[in-house]
Length: 406
Image (tube, rainbow, N blue to C red):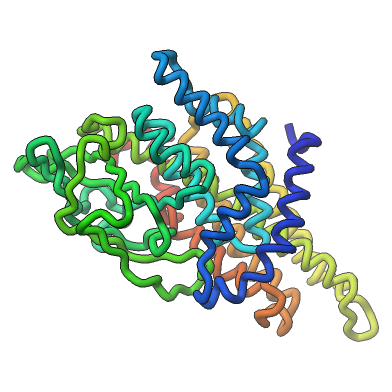
């Protein structure tokens, strides 16, 4: 269980080579915002054969749905990637160089594409799910609002008002990954039929860029993840047909469960990102303490430095083991939400700590931009904020374990 099979190792090696040759040279431009990452994502998908791998699996699911045959989307995606661990390794390798690029890739293909493939009608899967799974289209997941972060449902103000055979969408979303370049927005909104706000159900709408009333704000200036463009998205009287309603039916209160399922999938991807960050910090630090000399000795001979290296090693193996367990859970259809929530929180914290430790080991050199460690520290911080803050994830885990509602 705790060893990558030969095929997954090969995929990891190929992705690492691609990252060094194609992604790393683009980091300055992506961080500065003079280039967007989306065309590079599409090139990566073509080079690694996502259309043959994931696209083929989506087409099989689509054919089964059209014929009336049952099709489990989780099993389908597992079969498409040979093992869930393979996709975690891809995310890990991308995150060694650019956690932001990994995040944008995961949101588009996994969160948005995955939700449509799992919950959409056959027509929606063909129109949007398939091209999102192969990165022919770029997707954005739109849940967070200016006044609705941790209280995503209670404070949600975006509404979809039924009007004949259509819905009229009004509201705004913020901190939206891929917003500046997305082709498709998966938007969560309360269906407003005039009932009290507390009783409104949440449904999900597939909104295309270019529809009248859809506007996107400029990219935010951020502490980290600067190579992952983030923006606000505004919806002003956007008219949507039933074909834009995910699954073709309103979910009512069940829409919140669907959203939590998607959050669980997002949180399951964070440890792989943390794994990549910590592994890069450990590898760089280990090499540095062997070659850097002070007072006539390699600094790796000093006990204080040795303790830091061991600390990084333990963080690396801890998060790596978490990813192995998550992959096992995905492969066997196990949905352990307390573990998902708690391990997301822990992995994020360990990634931040590892990046700061690596900088400390490298001293002034670690503080310099050219080594890339300061970037990993800036990027790692978002893992403690996105997909639910650390406190929210730990509280969610505790409430499920205890059986509490508040």
